Image (cartoon, rainbow, N blue to C red; front, side, top):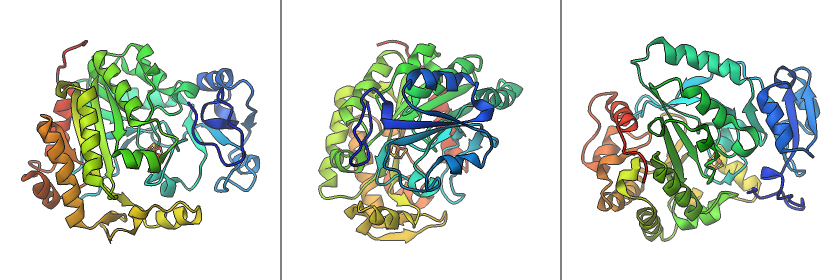
Length: 384
Ligand code: SF4
């Protein structure tokens, strides 16, 4: 599967995501991941960066320039922390999820993607110093084996988009087999299930997909597989005994959105049984203020950015509350009719919005995080 190529550049179907150049920090040039990438992309030039400044020299126009000659994959030695709290604002209900930081950037191209404004670069970055990552994670997860963790890799990247090239998740799942106190959520828009080859405990991996209304998938998620492919992969994961999570995030206002989200919920019900699903998040449209101008400069500003927004406490712009509540309530109502009412939560919303959508808010400051932890670790029946 490949993403859309920049205009005028022929796509080679043998090269995932049209990656035309690999840059490798010298510190990880001999890593297992670098070896896998070399084998997967045999014809792609591989440049070792001898010092940090060499990245800019290796990229004509610098890291922020628009590139028309295919994508760049940077195998980096990450020097910061690998385990981070999810960046939820204090005034919103936080789900208590921890991020395992495996890389940055995504080869798909969604017009609502928050990474476009966060990262300011279209370079795909994978952190190849996995030994450092496992040392840090092992220290934290192993300190008290009765303490449970719900972690995920899909925050600054799609969890699995680069998996066919890097094998990152396979490595992570092999490592996590020693930690019964950790559930990892793999959040993706791809249909990649190659991670199953690590043979992880099915009740310690949550296979998660982002879903949206058909018109949003078709027009706003360039390079992403269709909904049917995602749900077929979800069904296969469920049949193998893995819990499935779904994320309606963001719910986008667009002409016919009521019918669109109803069609998606019908499709979910045709692929998955309620017991296959562990939880479903609903998130309203929100973005960093600079994103619309960037999209406009690329000639890709969708109409939904012309809705009315409010500047919120976390520096993002959000849909005005009345439409936000109407949309979230509509999607929640559709899912409740499928027997999923007990598995829904709102991503980064206040108690007021929770009450307006569900008639109640989570109990106590960490009520939502506790509930999701329970659902994540709940004993599930294995197999079909
Ligand atoms: S798939 Fe996710 S990470 Fe990738 S561009 Fe779309 S929203 Fe962003």
